[in-house]
Length: 113
Image 1 (cartoon, helix red, strand yellow):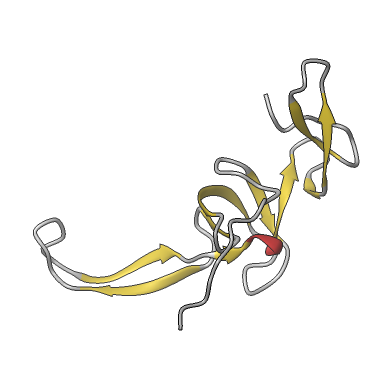
Image 2: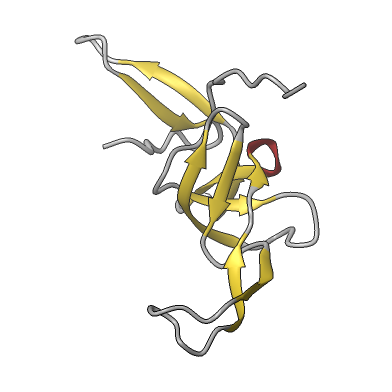
């Protein structure tokens, strides 16, 4: 029987700069290149690299071993604040027109434009 997954809200989005806080790549920084909201997983550029053995194809006639990013659970990454220079928690700020913005808890810098 297949495990049912439910789409969850996440504190990070595609394009965010994050820092990994646990696991073999703890301390590494990178940009989120893809998000799997159903499983609460993110793919971070040049983080959590795994080796994949590929067969020769028309696109890659040589084949061989390819390094690619594997998924991380979203709880293992924190949003990186350029002003603070470290991973930070996020708070919500609601503007007068009803728009919600993410802000840094430590310094108040805005992540959303």
